[in-house]
Length: 302
Image (cartoon, rainbow, N blue to C red; front, side, top):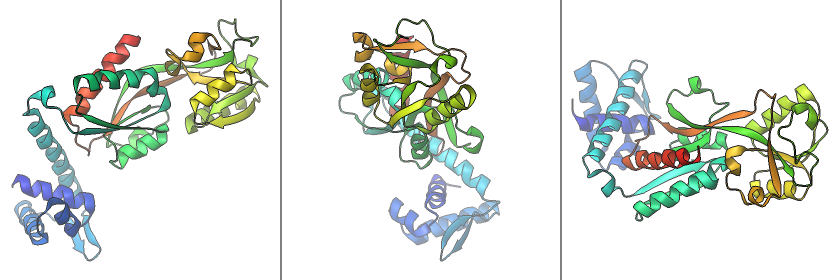
């Protein structure tokens, strides 16, 4: 058994093709084919069914291939740890984050990280939580920073996640609203109110639960732009529901144009936020270092 054999097995399992794996690893098809055959003979088990349509893992080979994945990832981690730790961090990191993470939590983390590692490149996109999870599953990003509620983790055993903070839903009203001086708001008080809503599946589900239980609200519009939503609230056009962590150091809140008020007696008023990654994608030293910075930045907000 050789490490090269494990690398070939992992790449064939990823691509479902010996020819594509050979191209990706810059070796000949015969090299990979012979290595896999030798490995199968050594273990006395067939790992792949090979045909003109490609290479498909056999039922008995799937567990072996899974172990090969794990070993390949560990080898990459060992090789990277052999470097001079954080001082040699370089390259790039791909992130996707939900809007609630962006201000000020993520931007503060990025500023501190780039200050210490100015040559490191971070590619970051803002997306909705379901899209972030899909990006992680497809291997398009290294880390997703997302709302963790509503995800069937049992159906995605390849995912690893960690809750970093709990957010609470706040009712956001204009400073001219009759609710502006309230210490809290109950669901019953919001019946028939006009709202602007963030255009996300989890938010829509929460509002549906809310209206089914307590009564209707008039949805003026939905948007995936939180600045547009906050401007509508500040102008007194409607109220909205936003997470408290998305309102930290917010200029509308600081100026007093928006008053965030706790929503009580509603069972879905809290949301969990954290990071998620795939076991199948190498968890780089850079990614781990970035998460340290993120956790430190979050600890300062508590």
